[in-house]
Image 1 (cartoon, rainbow, N blue to C red):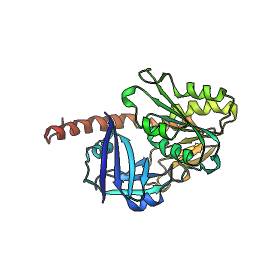
Image 2: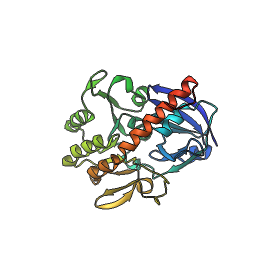
Image 3: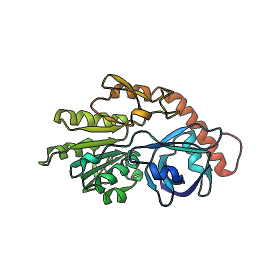
Image 4: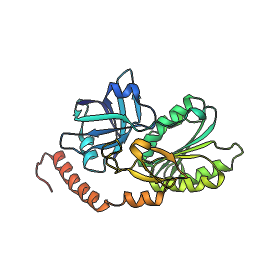
Length: 288
């Protein structure tokens, strides 16, 4: 059992939690993830580690309440426990060679929670960090002050222009590419279509581009094959070979098709669970 020791509602659909997990906190590095189960009947769900506090013995996770397990996780309060919280899993991001270099860290939506540890680490080792944070609208912005603190320049962009610049993260990236000081690395984390667009933009300029392929995972050990993807013509598994991959080598079209395979079932589960979730809030026990 792992106890929740802090909880914060970042916006209407995003929750931050600090979970007591001292062994993971001592070992975890940027880019790695955990797999949790809310209860004994719960499914295994991966979440990228958003930060650690080894002295406190806690691991930070940030998630959207969009499905059955995350809705149930979002209901948990300080003092509640999780049945399992396993990690750190996956390979850590390889960033040490970019000390003193110029790096663009791009986060789309919840991807900012995953990008923050990388940006913080790069800032710590002396890189010039250009953070590009993209959100649909101002109400969904998270970690703005935290990202400003670890960036040389912070670029906020929203689809609707309600905060920062109106447009997409690629618009800012294109401007940065045109500047005299070349980018040594682009690190992109967010929706697949966003990461694909970033990789397509950097490819003609020969800028190394790393993407985080946080695909569907079950066991986290490479045995189930749920997180397989094609990279450079070879089959890889995000949980053990990644989650970081060369964005110019990833077959994004295949990954997007696979990510849409269970949309109908996910929508049904989400609708049913939201009904149950609302009933708990009003004290009712029946569904619907």
